[in-house]
Amino acid sequence: MLSIGDFARLAGVTTRTIRHYGDVGILTPASVDPGTGYRRYGVDQLADLRRVLVLRDLGLGLDQIREVLADDPSVEHLRGMLRLRRSEIAQSIAEEQERLRRVEAHLDAIERGGTMDVDVVLKQTDPLRVAVATARSAGWGFEHMRPVFESVMPEVWVALTSGGVRVGMPVALYEVDAGDDEPVFDLGFEIGDQPFAGAESVRVVEPPVIEVASTLIHGRMAQVDETFEAVLRWMEANGREFSGTSRELHLRTEPDGMAKVTELQLAVR
Amino acid sequence: MLSIGDFARLAGVTTRTIRHYGDVGILTPASVDPGTGYRRYGVDQLADLRRVLVLRDLGLGLDQIREVLADDPSVEHLRGMLRLRRSEIAQSIAEEQERLRRVEAHLDAIERGGTMDVDVVLKQTDPLRVAVATARSAGWGFEHMRPVFESVMPEVWVALTSGGVRVGMPVALYEVDAGDDEPVFDLGFEIGDQPFAGAESVRVVEPPVIEVASTLIHGRMAQVDETFEAVLRWMEANGREFSGTSRELHLRTEPDGMAKVTELQLAVR
DNA sequence: TTGCTCCTCACGTCACGTGAGGTGGC
DNA sequence: TTGCTCCTCACGTCACGTGAGGTGGC
Image 1 (cartoon, chains in turn purple, blue, cyan, green):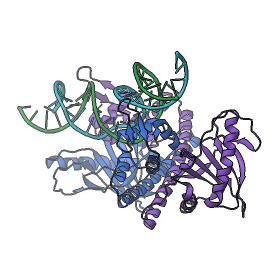
Image 2 (cartoon, chains in turn red, brown, yellow, cyan):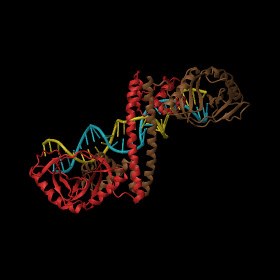
Image 3 (cartoon, chains in turn orange, blue, brown, purple):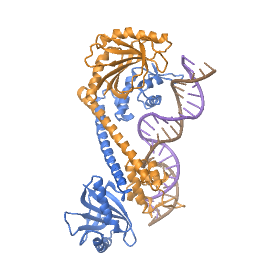
Image 4 (cartoon, chains in turn orange, purple, yellow, brown):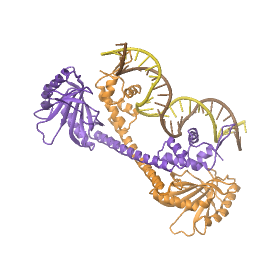
C-alpha cells in the first residue's frame, strides 16, 4: 500500500490531482483510514492512474474518462470517443492555422505601414430580408452612384411605407461581372419578416448567408471607394479572393438619410 | 447614440459581452443614465468594439487587449504581442498535431487487436542519481539476466550501506550496441543527493534526462521481455524509433527484493 | 396595459493550483 | 520535539452564458 504522496510521485503528478480524481470518482483510494482520513493506494492502482493520464493527454475530459472506465467492455465506447476527439483535434488545428495566418497578416501590415488602415473581419453574414429595386448607373465609383441612390431609395421607401411596411436599414447589393461598364445593382431596405407582396419595380430578396470580409465606414460615403480598395488589398495579404459579390449595410443614418456608419462586405471565394 | 442592444446587434455579439467589456475596462459606455443605469454608446464606438473583437479573434486575452488599447502609440506593443501570439499558436498547433497522432495510434491499436496490450506513455525522465556496478550476462532476456541481478545487486547494496548510504529504488541501465552478444549494463540503486565517493566496482552516475516511451510492469519480472517487445511495437505504430538506451526502475519491491512494480523506459530518438 | 429592453447580482464552466489552518507519524 | 506529510475547506483561473428578480420605455 502506498501513501498519496508516494503514489503521486511514482506517477509524476501532484497529490492535489490524485485527490481531485478521488473527488470526481475517477480513482478512489483502496482504503481510507477512518480516524485520520489518510488515503491508501494499492500498487496495482498505478496502472489505473496511468490509464487516466493517457486518456487525459489525448484530450478527453474527466467526465468522459469516468464513462470509459465505468463500462467494462469499453472498447466500443472508447473508440467512439477517440473518433470524436480525432475530428475535434483536426478541427482545432485548422482553426489555429487560420488564426496563425491572421496574426501573420497583421504583423505584415504593421511591418509595412505602421499599422493597418482598415479593420477587416472575416465573418458569416447575418440572415437578411430586403425589399429592393434594381438600379443602373453610368459607371462605378461614388460620384456615379450617388445620384442613383438619391433617386431610387426614396422610390422604394414610398412603395414600402405606402404598403404599410416599416422600413429598416438601407442596403445595397452589388454583383460585378467581368468587364461591366454599366453597373446594375439592387437598392432598398431591410424589412425583417414583415409580409410584402412586392410592387411595381420593388421585390423582396433574401441574399444568401455567405462568408465576407467586412469593415466599417464612418461618416459620409465619399470614402467608400478607397475603403473598397483597402479591403481588396487586405484580401490579397490574407490569401483570399474577391468573388465579385459585395454589400453595403447602412447601419446608422443621419436624419437626412445619409449614411453615418456603413458596413461594407466583400464576399470571399 | 445607441442602446446597448442596438450596439451589440450591430457588432454581432451579446449584450452580456458588451457589459463585460465595460466591467473590465475595455469599452466603457459613452454615457450612463444616472437614474436608470442605462448605458449609451456612440456610433464611433462601433469601430473600437471591432478592434477589440479582431484582437480577441487573434487569441489575445482581455488583459492584453486592454494594454494594447491603453497606450496610444501602441504599434510596438501590439507587434510584440502578436509575435508572442504567433509563436504560441505555432507551439499549440505542433502539440495538437502530436496529440492527433497519439489518438490515431490508439485507434489503430483498437482496430487491430481489441485494445492495447500495454499502456505506453511518452515522457521526459525525472532526474536520477544512482550508484551502480557494471554487470555482464551471457545473453539478452530475462533468463540470462536474472542470475546476474541476484549476484550483483546485493554486492552494490553492501557497498552502499557499509558506506552509510541509504539505498533507494533499484535501477538497471542498458545500452544496446549493434550486434552485442554479451550485454554489458549497470545495476544499482537510487541514492538521491547523498554523498558517496564510490567504492571498488561501484560508481555514481547521473543518467541524462531524455525522452522515453514508458510503461509499467506489474508482478514478477518474467514479463519483462514481452513487454519490451510490446513497447517496440508501440513505437513503430507511433512513428518513433528506439535509440538503444533503456532503463528499468523498480518502483516497488517485495520484502525479498523482487520487483513488484517496475517502470520500463525505452529512449526514443 | 402589455410586451420588450434594460438593470444588477450571482452561480457555473474545467481541472486543478495555491494558500490557510490544523493534525498525525517518524 | 522537530520537520514532514497528510487532512479539509475555499478561493482563483477565463470570458462570458444563463437564470433570477426587478424596473424603465413605447
